[in-house]
Image 1 (cartoon, helix red, strand yellow):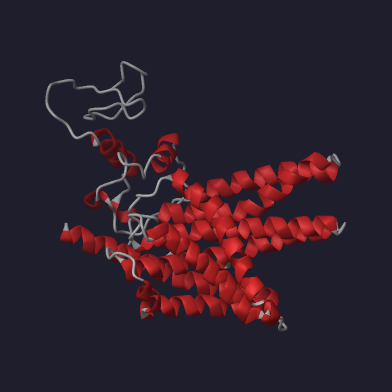
Image 2 (image 1 turned 90 degrees about the vertical axis):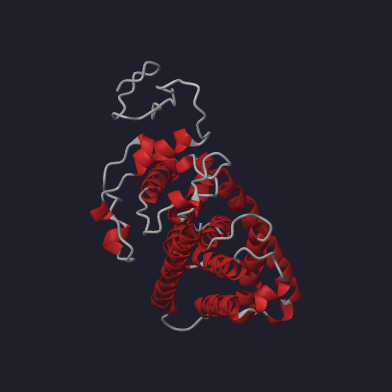
Length: 352
C-alpha cells in the first residue's frame, strides 16, 4: 500500500504510513492517540519467535549485531521514552533484548577517532587534538551506554534524558568525589578511593531515580550506566590531557587505548550495578534513607567498592590480567541483574 503523501510502500493492513504517519483511514471513530506509535513499533519490532530467547546466551543476545537494519529500526529506538511514545507495560517484551545499535555507534566512533588521529599524526595539525581526546574518551563509554539503553526493555527513558544524565551526572559525581577526597586526604589508599568514587556515583544515581518514575531494575541499570559513562569519559579526557601536557604522545594514545578497553568493566558497570540494586530495593515505594542499609542494596554496593579497590591495588599482575578478571566478574553480575529486571517486567505484566 503506497502512501499518497510520501509514496512510501507500506505493508498491507496498516492504518498509518510507517514513514510519515499519514492516516489512511479517516473516519469519526475515536482512536487511541498512541495508536500510530504502537502500530509502528509492532511493525518494526517483529522478530521471528525462533530468534527470541529468555536465556542470556551470547549467541542469542548479540545475534542481530551483524544483520542488516533499516533506518526505521533506528528511528524506532530513538522515539521511545516520551509521554506519547512510552510503550504500555503489556507491550513490553520480557524476553532478552537483542541490541545492535551499539555496534554501529562503536564503528562510527572509531572512524571519527581515526580521522582525528590522521589530522594529528599525519598532518601535524594541533587543532585536531581536542577532538582526538574527546572522541577517544567518549567512544567506548558511549558505546557501552547505548548497549544499556537498548537493554532497557520498558523503553520509558527518552534518549535526550540519557544524555542529560551523562553530562550532569558525570560532572556532579566527579565533584562529589572530590569533596570526599578532600575529607579523606590524609588516608588516601585503594579502599578509600573505591569508597569515595563509588559513594559519589551512588549518591548521584539515587538523586536521579528517587523522585522519578524510573523504578524498574533495568531503569536503574541505564541511569547508573549513564552516570558511570560520564564519570569514565571525563576522567579519561583528564588523564589524556595530562599525558599530552607531559609531552609524551605515546602515553596519550596508550591512555586512551587502555582506558577504552577497560571502560565497560569499570565505572560504567559499577555505577549500573549500584543503580539497579537501588531500584530493586525501592520498587514503587517512596524513598526512605533506610533503603540504603537493606541487604539487597548493601551487598551490591560493598561488592562494587571492593572491586574498585582491588582494581586500583598496585600488585603484580593486576594490569592487565587482574583487571580483565574484574571486568568479566562485573559483567556476570550485570547480566544477573538484567535477568532479574526482565523477570520483574514479566511479573508486572501479569499483575496489570
